[in-house]
Image 1 (cartoon, one colour):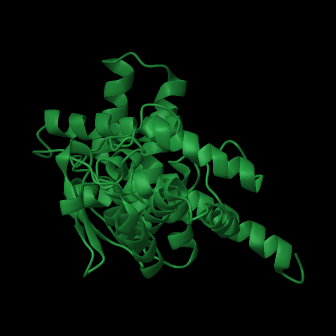
Image 2 (cartoon, rainbow, N blue to C red):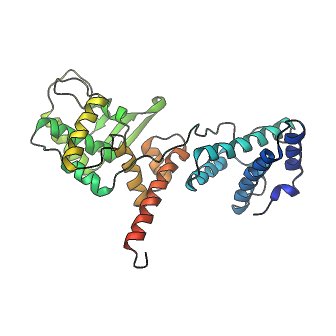
Image 3 (cartoon, rainbow, N blue to C red):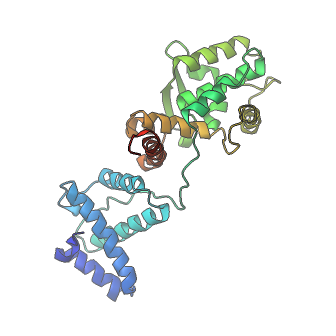
Amino acid sequence: MQHIYKKDQSLRSFFTFLYVEKGLSKNTIEAYSNDINDFLNWLNKRNIQDYKEISELVVNEYVAYLFNKALKSSTVNRKISSLKSFYLFLIKKKIISSSPLSEIITPKKDHHLPSSMSEDEVERLLRSPNIELDLENRDKAMIEMLYATGMRISELINLKITDIDLERSVLKVLGKGSKERLIPFGEKALDSLNSYLEKRKKSLAKEVFISNRGKKMTRTGFWQRIKIYLSREGLKDSISPHTLRHAFATHLLNRGADLRSVQLLLGHSDLSTTQIYTHIAKQRLGEVLKKHHPRG
């Protein structure tokens, strides 16, 4: 690994500042040094020569790169913290006027990889409800919509009749931070939704999915219904309604969807959040390769 900082006056001044003014130990300064050097080498490989001129977008790409290496969130946090300290030092010395890391938010605790489901497991779950029964027909529509759109459970149960355009197979979702997004959905989900709406009880509720009492569905109520089908199909009980959101993202990435498109569909404001799903996708691809490749 090339230690770029040894040739850079600003970096040498920063490390002197950490030692003399901050009184940090040599081991801590070495950690700062390694973190900053990793970043500079990453920039160098992308032919970005001047670290003083980079944008927030570049830093976001670096954060995504770190997650893609399957580093712990605590490690990513430390690396970004080192960079933030360095860029604040540059501002203090009037070398730059603003930091490209000022708006960067990193996770405060380790992200455990979200549990997901294989495509076969999803198919088994989707086949489980008996659509001849009104409640199970509703459940089938809810599960189909979750898997077809990647919606959060809260978004699904708050979905209103007026939010759905059945002709164009598009729905409007109000997500976190009251951010609105449009999500298309496929033919199978549309068929299940139409089947449910034809049999849906008359209700004053504005929401699409209602209980057998004609009231808005609850997250807990839906989860109790999901558990019936998990048990019926002998599927792992660690699965939750949110798992279908994870499966939606993972299966899209496995089949070649680009990360930015998946980010928009999921309603993630930060690409690094979506990046977590690439770990599952890569794990799955590795398992497939190991199982099916003639040389293992």
